Image 1 (cartoon, rainbow, N blue to C red):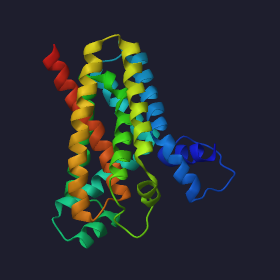
Image 2: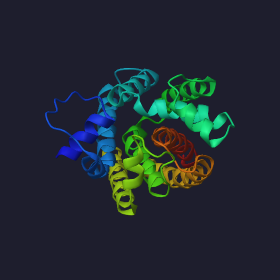
Image 3: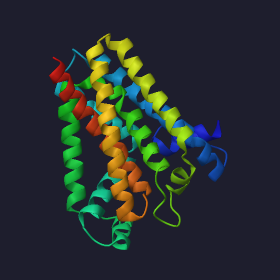
Image 4: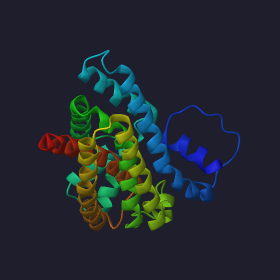
Amino acid sequence: MKPFILMLTFLTRIPLKVSFRFNDEDFRKGIWYIPVIGLFIGLVLYGTYNFLDGLMPPMVISFILVVLYLLITGGIHIDGLADTLDATASNRSRERMLEIMKDSHIGTFGVLGIIVWFAGMVILLGVAPWVCIVIPVAGRSLALFSSSISNYARENGMGKTIVDGTHTVHVIFSFFITALSVFLLYLFTLDFSIVLSVSVAFVIVFFEIWLHTVCLSKKLSGITGDVIGYIIELSGFLILLFSFLIKLVLE
């Protein structure tokens, strides 16, 4: 139970009173719960969408969903998105890019990345809100996949335990939870075209993230906690985008 509570407090801002200490082993065991927490977030978002659907305009609902997602997660991965974009876009040496990631200041590319992510999520969720149940779990599953095929780029850091402790079995389990989210989506919508579009989008993004991870690992000699956050948010955004585009083709 400790590893689950640890991950819940680490990955969300749900207020919990914790009266015991955690260690690296608890964190390592908590890797199993990362996709489960992603599914929980997805169910909260989908439940909110289902409740508000018909009561408000689609764009207002999508704005609420994005803000709710940021409130639940505390925007922890958005920081990784911005830092990774600032570092990789700087075209500097490996050492300098790692320094940029640790810098508390945000640069131009980081700001632009957050603006594009936020605007894109609001617009796309306005036309494909049903994907909100899959995005959180799929993004975290693909981040675990990236961790399983990479080394940690620093000698130590917050993400080291996740990168070093993630193995193929964790990835398989996370993909199973992702498949469960897609199955739940089908039960909720009874629309096979939606399920097909999300499934194909996940496969496309999987290969894109694979290539992206390899490129980042070459630049940084591994990945960092910031890169994990970057992959989570980039994956979710791309799955949403491709799901919408594929659904248009199927129609």
